[in-house]
Length: 223
Image 1 (cartoon, rainbow, N blue to C red):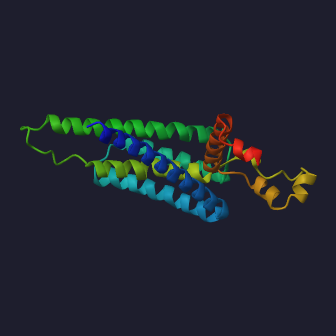
Image 2 (cartoon, rainbow, N blue to C red):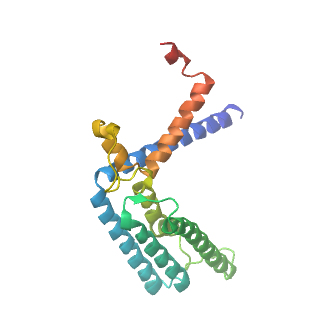
Image 3 (cartoon, rainbow, N blue to C red):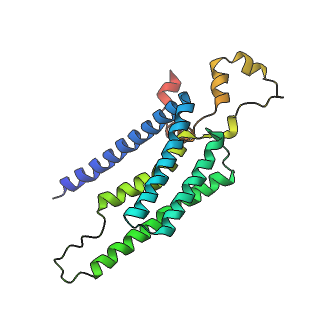
């Protein structure tokens, strides 16, 4: 077979492109939604952080999850909670924000190592090749733990927080003439832009620049 593998590669590329567009559209919509409902988003994220901390405690007490890793996860969510003090604005050089980025990667690494070692020990203790260890979590359970207890809050913060380059002016500063007569555009610029929206916009602008360099927009320029 020669044609079918090529069709498979082509379908994988098209599917990946559609998946990327779907993720980008979802991020853009969620960022717009958070900008319109900032107070509700802050309450939701705060309750979500406390809920996940309680869930981690229950997993440690009931399911005997390791205490040190659980403590690391709870401390990480306390650091995530510190980013809510000036929600939705955040400085990219803020120590709490930088610590949050490091803790996300650290939690992912240590929990991945934990589940890998647990699964390896369970298979080593099998008496027969045909036995199935019953004390190891399934792939669905591990993926759900990573999605809910490790990545959910950082992803929600990434969608919700706005870079503080366009924060509100201070009390002593005077608004410029362009901001006074700008109307909705000046109000939108003062409100700031979500990091997810900024990322999507930068990617789209980069694609547009590549298209312009490649000559895709020549017909539009002629018009």
